[in-house]
Image (tube, rainbow, N blue to C red; front, side):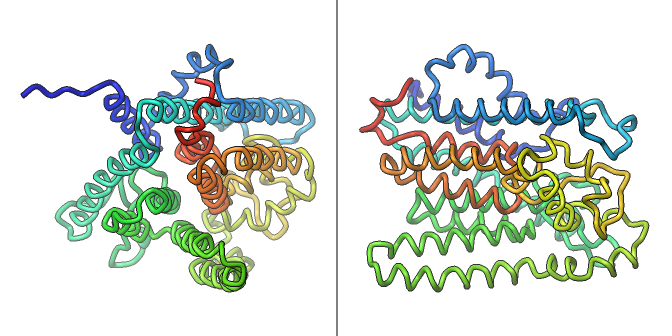
Length: 423
């Protein structure tokens, strides 16, 4: 019997594999450039050639990225950098780090356009949004099973976990290891947040498939991801609110219960951050030479507000956080560090820090315009925008490709509205 795969089915399989690469392989690089970004950037010339037929709402993002790059270049003319730039790799030097970030955003734009065009094409051929999303979820689900099997092999010492690529020991100083799954992400936190994205996406398109959702939850717990857990809790409360939104009395009762419950659970999950924040002076005193104790998210809690106060409208510049982090105006009780440091506070917060309140509001305005136009044309569009905001608020940076899948999905209407779309 001859196996025949029609063109739409072949495109669906190819698209699912492309999304899998963009979702999962964030730390597979060629000469410091992520392989998933290379694939998307290679398609940019084709996309630019077809700019006239690209969804205008996606085009807004391209104009926005050009705007923040231009503002950064102008701002850098009077900017003082507080890191030894001679020791940096070429792509981390002033101006070049901003251009590098722009190309990362360009890859995100290309990915969103490809998602939109593929969805529009497949829907026009009779496939539903749910079927397309489920094909992508299924591929990630099977890969998750492989990662769990590998984790168990490492956990039971069948394989040696030293130098393992997909996990690491968070308590190397103790006799017994605490293994944290990270897949092909830089660490467990972002990896778990990605799986929270998959869980929320699955709960949107699948009323059942409980095993799939359970596996995604297991991945979050194996990653020891607090942000991932908070995202799932937040999404659960949102879906609960939506379920009862038609009853005015019940809706407001649920709303009044959800907000304090979510805040309480979020603070409980992130309790160690609160302890570290409150005891920062003791941490610095006890570990004066340990830069890791005063880098990343913990340091950014103190530094970022000062950056915003001193640069409220235009920010410190795209990608410039590590370069100006040691400015005495920003440090407060935090000491200088001679290494490359990132805030880790999430894409929306980083946007506010690096590009100021003007760019921040413009970005939110674009999201709101998409929400207003497409939420009535597709319930999934509304959920996609809200999920994008949740994920970006909890730690993922805006240059991660997978969140732009939500933007491409958000600007895709249901089949009856496709006549309004530019193909």
